[in-house]
Length: 210
Ligand SMILES: C[S@@+](CC[C@H](N)C(=O)[O-])C[C@H]1O[C@@H](n2cnc3c(N)ncnc32)[C@H](O)[C@@H]1O
View 1: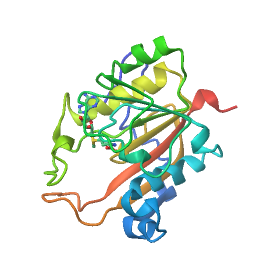
View 2 (view 1 turned 90 degrees about the horizontal axis):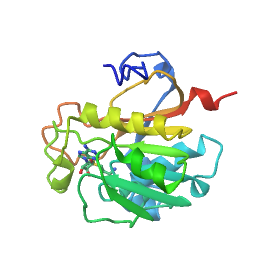
View 3 (view 1 turned 60 degrees about the vertical axis):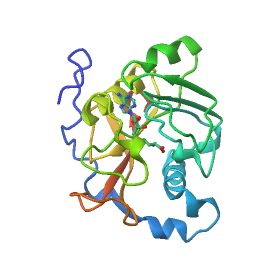
């Protein structure tokens, strides 16, 4: 899939970086740590992954372009939390700044803030799921792939060093793999044909590497 002719990279080109580097993480192992990881296991997973950048996640500026309820930040908080979504959901964590925008155009508003995010987070809806408890996650404006592309483009335009994707196993060109997780959640979904697995992929843009 071509993200944009002008940027000439693809998100499904399989650059072969993930391969053996994929770590399997079970939700229950994270919850066994106790504390906020019980209620927000994915937040703890996101924190662990960002530690692999060798930066303190709590000192980072994060732009989350599919903010939802903000569950990725239930157990920790970045220095500055910028958020966007096409819908305002019931937040579990209030971001420092929020704008109602699709993933592909939010960069224009962030540019005006004069802030460069360290990491852009994109977690597109999975339309094949019927989510029993969180109906809002079925909100889709554009296809999941379009939303993903928009997040990648936003990270590129804003010159964010890192990109964190929660989706399938995707390997966008021009991004170097930092960490990859196959996440096994405790059963919560119905009609999940993919056997409940999802993937967290943390990447660093190649221009930021010396
Ligand atoms: C899987 S949920 C994200 C959950 C979020 N990570 C959390 O922790 O609560 C996907 C989100 O994408 C949003 N969404 C749908 N279409 C969008 C678009 N075109 N641009 C940005 N966000 C979109 C939905 O409103 C929903 O909140």
